[in-house]
Image 1 (cartoon, one colour):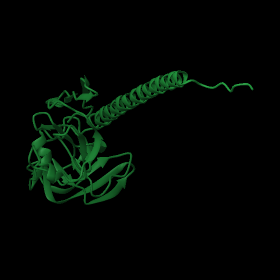
Image 2 (cartoon, rainbow, N blue to C red):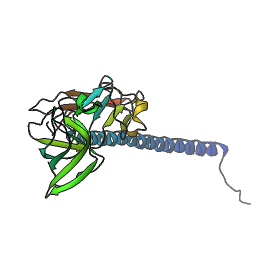
Image 3 (tube, rainbow, N blue to C red):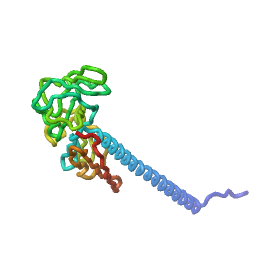
Image 4 (spheres, rainbow, N blue to C red):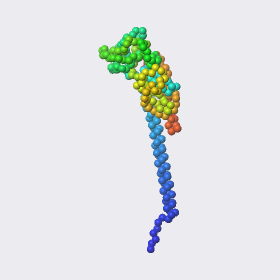
Length: 259
């Protein structure tokens, strides 16, 4: 009779060891690949968030109403008033003369409920609530006086504090604030009531919108005051950290509008 041949115990052990080594190698390779993918995803997400935030803030800063830039919290927060419309005014009341209406040129119909500003020389004139003489008034009604000329009703007789050297007016809705929280999140706050304080509390700003994460520095915002002939310059310098590595922006943005 022929004897049946099979694996010896030694051969079986060798096969098991070889298979074990192969499995471990494949597992390590797969784990390394997954880790690389996870790391790359985290880096790409942080880069995308940072670019989006910089682009959004740049757009808002460039269209800001003159002298509406406010930096607070040691550089953590940036408040500004985005412009919705602008043009030249024909006539408007200036202190000490008062009136309840003004006439402006505009290629589009001004919106009731927005605010109109002329000649603001400081952020205090724009943000502080003042009776009588002010740098901003709410538009209560709009009438089309003639082609591209509109009459804006601004309520009880009032007056703008200063004239514009360029006969410019600006229209806007509300201020917005970008603020970096202690946890490194950059939040956007909007649709909140006017804040007289230069450093409003987070509770007064309402619910924020998350713009980006992983910011590790405090001095995120800096600004140079505008003058009668030059616009303000805002520096965006957030530093982001991801996987133990950090990168920092140094992006300068000029406010296009001038008083």
